[in-house]
Amino acid sequence: MGRAYKVVILGGGVAAGYAALEFVKHGINRGDLCIISAESVPPYERPALSKGFLLPEGAVRLPAFHTCVGVGEERLTPKWYKEHDLTRKTLLTAAMETISFQILIIATGARVLRLEEFGVTRADAQNIYYLRDVNDATKLLEAMILLKGGKAVVIGGGYIGMECAAALVTNGVPVTMVFPESHCMARLFTPQIATFYEDYYTSKGVVFIKGTVMSAFESNQNGKVFSIALSSIDNYFGFSFIVWSDDSLKP
Image (cartoon, rainbow, N blue to C red; front, side):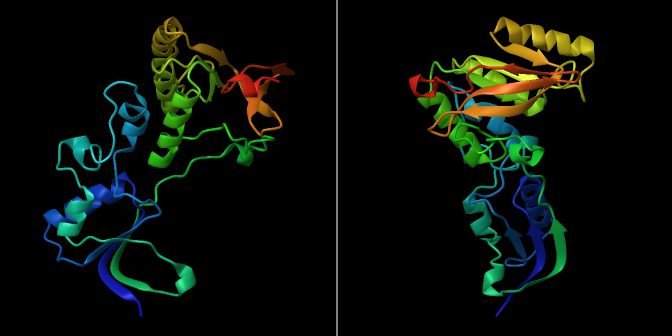
């Protein structure tokens, strides 16, 4: 037998949390709203993942950055959802259960683009990390602690890449950034603004390799990456350096 709700929010990201707060403010009845999410925790402010979560001092953890603290509203912890009867449920299609609704809000957000989608070989290596959700951030944090003194390569020069690079060097991990644009955060920064930030990052030990893209990885018998190959627009060349390094990663 299926369940019925007045409002179903499909997706458990930032938008879902803010939407739930607005429905409560406007007097939705208890039990009339359902959030369906793949995540194991209620919605949270994702920018915190590449900010306080990865920092070695004053690090933040849930429930500190659940929505909707980003705009100064109350923090929607699991207790808040329980008090307002906004139960998080997982839709299991294999169980043939139907969830009916009067209003459906699709707020699934975006998913991380994985390297194998670009045809990069050996993109399933153990020491390749992504940053999209709190589980990703936890794995990256554990890697930084475990491989203290190693080296990291950040692929991409956008907002998340820049913040990851900042967190890595703050944690004592030397960083090389690789991206195809002529300067960092090309969709947002002018060359002049980008130069300011690149100079600051360089002063902290970050190395920039710009105007090129990654074409392949080299991995060892343990399935870990130890070098990458880069390709410019006009030609192909190899460039070897450590992604995450300890003695077991050396070729």
